[in-house]
Length: 487
Ligand code: FRU
Image 1: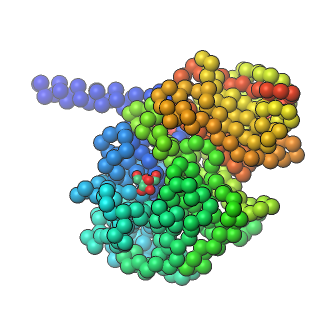
Image 2 (image 1 turned 120 degrees about the vertical axis):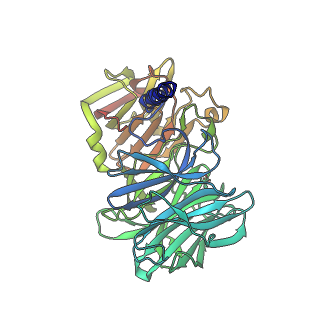
Image 3 (image 1 turned 180 degrees about the horizontal axis):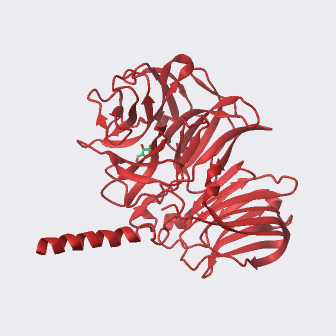
């Protein structure tokens, strides 16, 4: 009887626990976050058998970085996720650092036809090597290859292998980072086990911090049926991309070397990689929405960190180079609920809107004031707000979280503004904003620039204000949608 009572107590405690999950303060409702504990980089993004696999760096034991393992979730639509057991754990003192996954259709490695093979960095304090693990049950369980490591340069920093099948040359290509040299090295292999060095790319562009998490892929050029090669790198704590050609041996950047091209100008976007093998072969990216400078200090519990919305990417030629165009995948619109629309509103000073919230999507086209700063404030209340503005005299867009709650971390408080030069189009600016409790992703001019930022507002800090510090701003239209909870 005692035993039954105990089991009943356990079951109901578990129930209460589950019921409260995904309802916590700051918990995003339409972004992916782990149930409990720490998460960082997305790993092994692979579409297989109608499922998008999302592996990610995790600490299975605590809500801070450590004991790095690969946790696992799957989705049929990239919107709703099912959590699965931890796929690959730290073992014998070797942590599972970031990497990628492939489907070995031709059984080149001998792990079985259609084996899912994870290529990851094995990390200790003194050595990083590249290793394999394989799964014959669509990623549910993995076996570490007994011939590991497959690539060992006896280096302390050498990490984040990203592998794809290069049809043209009938071989696997790996991009892997030499963080301190600001270089990406390319390798080729016939069997995933023996790797031959091809070339190195870098140092160039942003070399202000270690390079991590490379990803090399082909991306469509808007309005054509042509593609170019794009290389992503992450450098603590922002990202950059290069656009050019990959000839099977080396990558050549065709963008001006003097300019840094960023995926995201916000404070919280890092370690992004892509699903390469999507049904339409156009890459879809997912990034980690946090920043190493304060990642462990953000005030969320029992989880830490969120993934970005999946972004569909393409390329566009502008005057001085190729830019990445990023848009949330179109099927995201199925999450929309009631809409509010208004047109043609002129604002001088400040105006609080008649609707509010912390979970919404908003699209607006406006003509900023030509003399000062104008735009929108979100999470307004208790003298707090997030200010998203355009400073017309300086042609700059600014996302300023200095007036939000920053009390939990001095470093977070000091990294409080993101800026980028943005040109108006016919005197106007288009913003597509996704606000989800503690995450704000802002897509500018149909995805030509993006800003992602974390904020930690109280629940009643939910008003929305249009403003213009000087002169008049004209809002052509503003569409606002409440969104369904994905959990
Ligand atoms: C990037 C990174 C990777 C590394 C992983 C460790 O955020 O530093 O270079 O593999 O995180 O968790």
